[in-house]
Length: 198
Image (cartoon, rainbow, N blue to C red; front, side, top):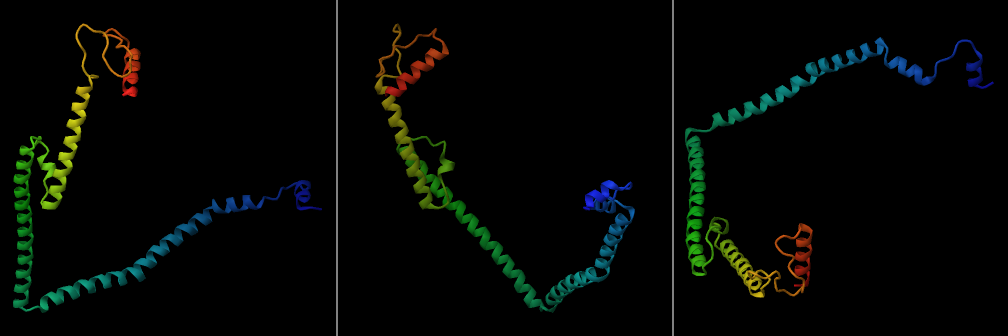
């Protein structure tokens, strides 16, 4: 006879292995055991490991304080002087960068004015490094040249002008302008046709 037949044939059913495990895990004894183990682990850490950690940290700090106290007054003065020198050097570097930036700004302003370019983006172009500033100026002037060339070509092609009294705009598409009372779909179709042919 199999185990299944024995279980089904008897009047009292034998609980399955899964049921036994679930019952044990939810039992009061198991929960109390887990809580006791947690408490013991925390107490054990506090008694054994925490004092070692605290002692180590205290020793480090005590050694640092002793080293500081071992220094002679001359050494302490020297340390203070070195700190002041480092601070002054940092201030000098910052001042030098500001001076270079102001100088570069003046030079860039002259260049942009000579080329009759807008100076609104001056702060974005100028850097405290001359080489970087020169690259930024070159990039900006090239971009402005391309933009003005494209703008001029657009005006010269005649696609952007509408002659009063005419319902068509000359262009390469050959498609007539739908008029001021045209629907949005008609205007979109006309726009796409004129742009795709150019």
